[in-house]
Length: 164
Picture 1: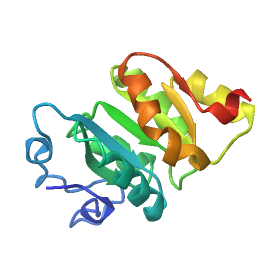
Picture 2 (picture 1 turned 90 degrees about the vertical axis):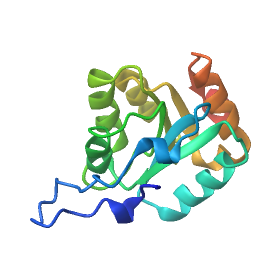
Picture 3 (picture 1 turned 90 degrees about the horizontal axis):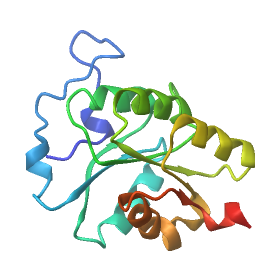
Picture 4 (picture 1 turned 180 degrees about the vertical axis):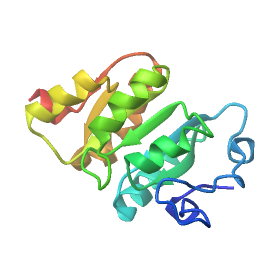
């Protein structure tokens, strides 16, 4: 079963912070040799495009698609992916705040920031938050798999346009 934003609806009590993930079994979605990736972006088309690129590599497995940092923190109570691809600007909780919280509680989880923000101050904030990589959305089609490969090898990835 795949988790996406439709399966993270508020529970019967209507709490905006309580999600019913009881039907999710991580082993249903992951093969023994796959690298589990969680996509977090408030734009469905971005998630769809990123997922399409990831599906080109049989070693990579998208285990969920979420819309914001609050959904992400709730997801992590039930499942811990190896890598989170995370947007900076999202409603309810942005990617930089979520990165700080995740790295404080789960430093082993790798985080690749995927963003439109090409200003150095965003990059600096992402680094301070503990992000393992920073990729501009305009380069995602050419650089996403390279970014993931670098991060998997323990290196920090920086979008080529940010180094120019």
